[in-house]
Image 1 (tube, chains in turn brown, purple):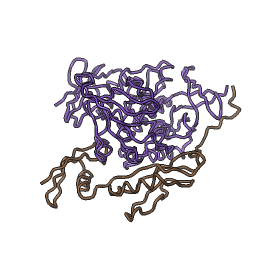
Image 2 (cartoon, one colour):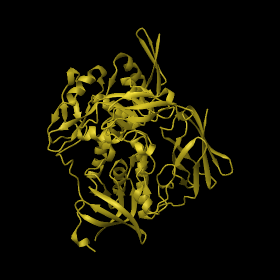
Image 3 (cartoon, one colour):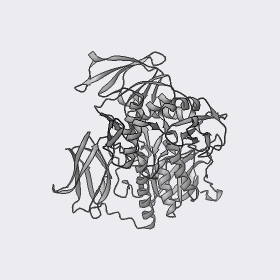
Length: 136
Length: 414
């Protein structure tokens, strides 16, 4: 039997997991919620991480739009994804949730915009109107 | 000069400012946010990694997504948002406050307001603050600034980096640099334990086998035009042991060595500050020593989770609402102070008749610790067992009403 210690990354509590691997049986202890159990198991069978990155925007001003994977991605696919993201550019406007890469590497996981940029001057917002009657 | 009136002015449009403003507007206060940058969201915009909002929005978001959710709350409200505007002074004026504002679009003018919510956030400590010796070459960055360069502008700071300090920003940057193709040689931490959250050690260092040198310090930054490397040495009895000094080649050094609340205008207008938190001293309503001025978020004390910033901001906003409506219970007569094992407790004052909710930080690392709060007669009024205690992780507790004007909090390793 092999024992592996891992820290659960699901939430800031950071439970100290002890994962016991016995042939094809995996048991997890030290978790304080069900997410810890499934995290511990997947760390052995199929480790995955949510990937975030910043993709350059086609614009006269140098700026990036944040993107993320729609679900945790198998760890072994991450380098290829990052290489692609850090060498591409996207056009504006971009709204939150817009698909940047569809079905990456046949995983059914999309890379989506995790921010909003309508033009390179950033999202337009309501701005204070000072009326001249308020002059003192 | 132009003058405009509000019920509440929120200084800063980051997580704290947006959360506070939304709560004020929900309660029909005429509210303005004054934000220095050309967009709201503050540091959230550059924190493109995931892990925000688990408590506050019950779902895991990236920083920009968290900021968007807060901004969406404001879209349907009447909150005025001034971008590219800075407050340079706060002056008392007949029970109200006059804020001097410099704006890109409107020039200089005055905002007169009944209440002020300070939400300016914090700043990074830099190489100079901790006195790291060596050459003054290019390639030395604050971790948060490097994060802004990479994540919002798409520039890489270098190709081979050493990170000084294991705070969360440093750890997150170790992963970001690695993911961006920059080799991270190591993270150097002066304390014998890591400064960041455990899960960040796991997913930002262990995932990439980046060495973490605990109880080590940088003894020299080397390089003429550009950083060529750093010398590091272990600490023995609090001093670097130069016999064991070693050279690590790199072209970039990132500093993640703590954050300091940005309280310049609070200091200027005479608000009493806490020497430990470097934020304002506040009561249970999160009101500062100036009646009507409240503080929340990282300008009050540095948080490790944005969720707690939002909750604290709402608490400050509710107090501002109550003050404007004349229902604020300002009977905060009791003080609480930090003793053995406790670095600080916020708020510093509370109501003995109502008790209160507190944030605190420990001074040590322990699997289990006992929190004990005594009144000024030495009687135990509250105790609680805490798990995985470390200075990096904020702790919370709630006190019942107490029959005393003072309380002392201690934390003991079990």
